[in-house]
Image 1 (cartoon, rainbow, N blue to C red):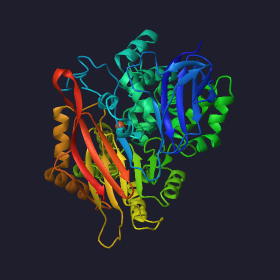
Image 2 (cartoon, rainbow, N blue to C red):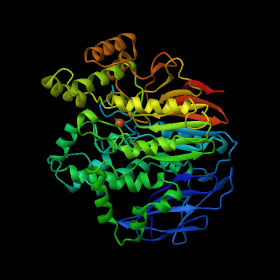
Image 3 (cartoon, helix red, strand yellow):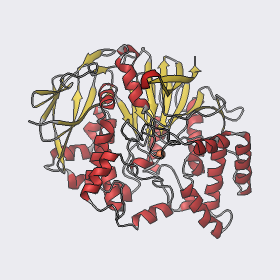
Image 4 (cartoon, rainbow, N blue to C red):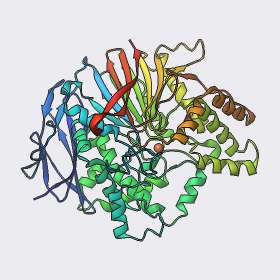
Length: 550
Ligand SMILES: [Fe+2]
C-alpha cells in the first residue's frame, strides 16, 4: 500500500475550492472529501495535487486524505486539531501570516542556541511557535493564508539529516561539497524542511502561497552577469539548477497556481500524462535557467477584495547587457502591469526582495550599481563587482531602473490610473533578516489616494548575530544614510523615486512572523517575534502594530 511521504500541504484556497498537495512512495489514487487524483511520477517520486471542489463559501470543513481508499491523514493518535479548509467570504476579515528565510535544523543544541553562542545556533522556528499556539486557539483566530517569501529551503546550508544523506552518497571533497547537488538531494531537503510535525500540520491546514529567493537555489543567485558566467563555468551548476527548478516546480510552484491556471498549464498536463516526467521536467528546468523569457514564476491570487501579486525577483532577471539590467523580463513586466489593474480594496505585492531597504543600504546598492556599470572607470567596476557579490548588493535598489518602474506602477495604481485606487498598496518582502514597516511618500502633487507601504519580515528561522545587527542598525541610522548618500552622489546617482520612513525607531531582529488583516477598506499589520517562556517553551510576542488604513 502506498504511504504518504510528505504533506498534505494545503495550497490554493478559494471561495468554494482548494488544492491539496502530497508526495507518496508509490503510484496511487489520492482522495480528499470525495475528490480524486492519480499521482504522477518523476524519477522515483510520486506527486498529486488534488482539486477539492464543492466547498461552502465562508465555511470551515475538516478533511482527511486517503491513498487507494486507506486513510493516511490525520495520522492515528494525532495530537493536532483536525486539518480544515477555511474558505473565505467576500465581506469577512482575511488574515495573512507571512515572512521568509527558514533554515531546517533540529530544535536541540547547538541549533537552538543563539548564533552568538554557537555558529550553528538558529534559535526557535517562528512558524513552529505559531503552529503550537494555533493548536490551542479557536480556528476562527487562525490565519487564512501563509505567504512564504523566499528561502523556504537552504540548498547551501543543509540540515544535519540532509548532510548525512549527502555524505553517504558522494564525495564532499568534490564541489559543490556539502551543499545540494541534484534533484534527488533537493527532494530530501524539502522532505526535511516540511516534515517537522508542527510545520507539517500547519501547512496542512493553512493554505500557502510561496515564491523563491536565492537560497532555494544558491546564495546570491543571479546577482549579476559575472556571477552567472562564473557559475555556469563550474562542473556542477547545471545539475544544481536543474534540480532546483525541477523541485521548485513540483514542491512550490505547482501548488501556487489556481485550479484555473493549472488547467491551462502545459507542463502540468505533460507530467500527468508521462510514465516518468523526469526528462520533460529536466528539459524545462534547464531552459528556465538559460532563457529568461518564456518561464513565468510570478502569479496572482485574489482573497475576496484583496489581490496578492507574487513577483519573482530572482529567476527572471535580465542581466545582459549589464547596463540594461532589469529585475523582470519584458513579458513579466507586462503581466505585472496588467494584473495590477482592477477593482480591489487592497493590493499586496509579494516580492522576496524589498523594493525599499534601510536607507543606508539603498544608497550603497545604487552606488554599487553605478560603479559596476563604469561610473568610476573599468578597474573600479571590477572591484565593484567583488563588493556586490561579497556584500549581497542585489536588491531592487541595485536595479535602479526597475525600482523606478515599479514605483511608477504603484503610483499609477494609487492615483487611480489602473482602476479605483485601493485603500492600501503594501509590498510584502523578506530576505534581509530584519523586519520593518516603511511608509512610502510620493512627490507632492502626485495625487496618491492609496496608502503605500513597504513591509519586510525576515527571518522565520535564521537570525543575525550581534555584529550583523550592528551593521543593519547603522544602515538605518542618520549617519549610515548620509554616508550612503554621499557615496551614491559621488557616483552620479540621483534621488530615489520616492521617499520612505520607518514607522518605528529601530528595525526588528530575531525569528519572527508578521500578520496583515484586511477587513473591507481597513487593514492592520502586526509583527510577532519568538520570546522564551518559563519551562523552556516559547511564545510569540507582539512587538509592533499599526493600522495601515481605517
Ligand atoms: Fe534571500
